[in-house]
Image (cartoon, rainbow, N blue to C red):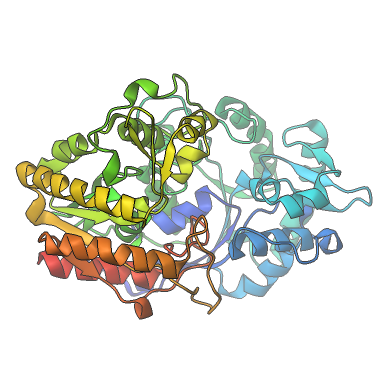
Length: 505
């Protein structure tokens, strides 16, 4: 059935909140049927209208532009000003209370800012706010102040003619993951505790006449492979689809189901962020990731340091734990073989080679991944070995020998002819023309020079190469993983996938 004329006009959604609302619009399989008119994130209702801009440290450096913009907006308390600016281009105001979860900080003059993970993660900004009083979410004092603010906010929504277009997400935190494990907490609160605390906030809004949206509790399952990582409010795809169905219904619209491609291309990824993001973020290409082997240098396979892996590693996702254990055991080829039958394309990304390897006294080789080195128990093992830096003659010579071995692995697994090697230069500038920072001291110029001879060697071995030029790449300062010379803009990922599909056509 074809879409109606109304359905062809994108539903204009203003998002107030984070997490569930943001991901519902971004991830639900509705294609271009909806669009975000503005995104107001990281602001408690209690900080709205409280201008603490003078408390924001002048010249504060933040990890990336999105975070800086959200922090400044929260300090300015500009929620209602933003809503007034966009009220006439809003079909639905989707309100998500997720950003209330860690309460607010109250300065001695009564000004309020939201206590978010972003605030705690930025040393200069946190220093300016750390002495303010923490008014924690769920306490009687927080609720009473929030409830009073909610009454006035609802009246303001009515004045802006937004009240009838407002929908509040009443979506509890997930208790379990789709792998059957208990979902973690967030900001010191377990799912069962957070869900209890949220109830009276939702009930208060219902009492004020605000519409709430709920979905089948069986859909509330956390996804360890979520694009933003494992959290109790990062759900599997079905939850987002269910949310958006109801969002459309709230506006008297129908979300048309976009059929999946009959046979999506099954992509196994070996390597780092470029290949992963290209498949994950490039839209409408009919490809899906069936397996991802990451944080494993080509040099580490064939050595076995499994017995050295720490007995307990906490605070990491299952996918990262699997990657580190695979690297220690040198089992990358085993995973490639296991994935062979469900692989139409093996996309090989050399970015994980960028920090080199550690050679231990017994000859074991471990990949020096950023994630691994952030874990004290793993970092101490690396510190006991010798660093073989990427791009050095020692690294390159050893890597060439492993490349020949890996070629035989791919041939015996029947995936050599399905393998594509990404040759995507690191970006020297962002899309805004600003010079991008290096990665762990390795500049884009150095990285591109080093990678060039590795790729040329693979080409000499008969590997197919998917190449972009330096003029075709730009870094995205608002990339979901933060700024880096290998975190590109959307058009770069689309171009990568386009050329990869041309290569396998």
